[in-house]
Image (tube, rainbow, N blue to C red; front, side, top):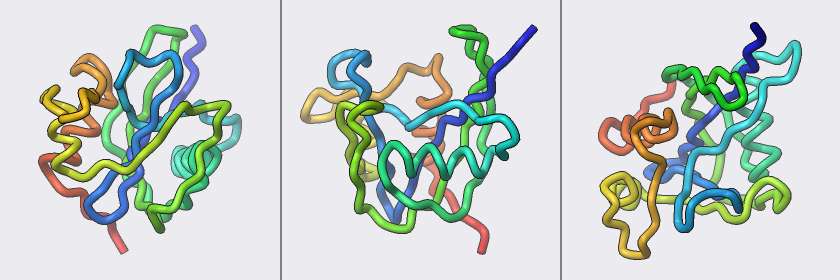
Length: 144
């Protein structure tokens, strides 16, 4: 059976991570950016390309985190962290309704469903939740 690889990644710059929201998301929910891996493309290249396409953010180092099968529509989610060069961004309005940088404290508030603006993160059934949780509670160190 066919399985399509999808990268889902958390762009990190200093003490902030970039999250986006698609129009189909539940109200107030922000998540990691994601997109399909193209034929012949490495995971690292796909992570950099998808972040650049959706937000115009350029990333350097990419670090694998974990994977998760996702049955809708037969995908394998490949979770990664990416080191962003800056916090300057411009979203692709076709892909995203909104995006913003969240501090570590704000990310913890999203995960614990206590953000002052009522914003939330994906539930623990999604790899995006675990990417956020890993980064929020254990700083990521990228190699040189």
